[in-house]
Length: 459
Ligand code: XIL
Picture 1 (tube, protein in one colour):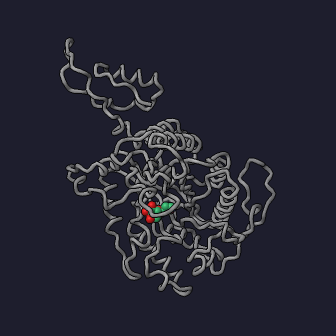
Picture 2 (cartoon, rainbow, N blue to C red):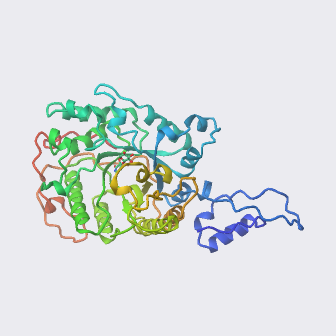
Picture 3 (spheres, helix red, strand yellow):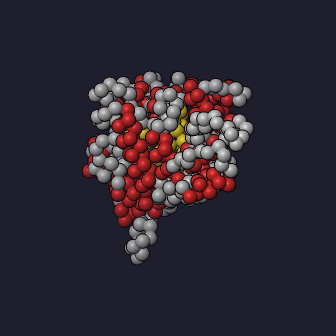
């Protein structure tokens, strides 16, 4: 919600009006800048054009912070004028927007294996380091995306990785990358998209190169290695296709939840599940199934991060205004639902401006509109103006459950539970379920947690 800005109002009057209009977040903040010409009684000049009031205290970043949330976006580090920002001389609109709107950043591609690993022996942190520098300058947090995925491999991977060396390759990569950024990352997507019911395995695991080369314990290996190398970071399992109330999403959501229970029961250091949230403008929408999933995650002691929101309008007929209206409605409904849950403290859009959205840049049939028009999935359009999605996001954030500000680090389990504790009947129906009642852990050859391990140095 925005207020008409009358240049003759006093701060108190503005604040009263803001409060009356339900804009509680306006109360403790500074007033937006007012026109500075002297106001004389007979001044007949037309009022100054409406300021856009979307930056500073009216930004997504500030509104989220007022609720104890982190709002952020995926960015392309190459496009950021880091030097200009460092000398306060940048005139680049994208750079200014990213600095103003995001409280947390994630590299859209620059921390993936293919970007960090030009050869099996070398690392290239140049773009990721630029992002870190920018975030430092702007007081922003950073998510690390990602440490282990079936996609995004460098070209050398296929011919180099074998059953003999893959475990070491994974451990070395995670150790090197997490150590490089140690202490500067809010959360790591340690494993991305490991579940695929279509692959038909009872444990739901995708037949990814990591599964095939390392075995099903590659996930816990990845989490344990990340925890040791960057103990302050929150560790996240991230996936897509778990948002909707469709049979397919329901099955995948169930398998992701079983994976999370397995990991928790084995004492694996994991703190959150990332729900990517690549939403669609048409067709079934997220609903009760996702809310149940978020509450089940809470019972496991896990937060839920909304990691990659956008709204695909591929099948939506109509011009830009219709796209804007529907996209804003999808965001409003979605965030209105998930941000009410107290264990959802972080939400990012996959990009900040339509011009850089992957929905407009990847060459895939599932992003192409029949009319050939570009998609408008993000809070700012390609001229960097706020879209209705911006206002929908901000209003939903204003109504979010108030969270405590996110600590940089929080305690994690210090000792792995016994490998197979006896399954006790659970007398209290509202108590946390005993994970061993709900699934049977799959046998894991050579798993780091099959024998008792020393307490992990994770805190
Ligand atoms: C996408 C990027 O946006 C594209 O630029 C790239 O070509 C492919 O990857 N889920 C994820 C992200 O976890 O890493 C993907 O990012 C989008 C889907």
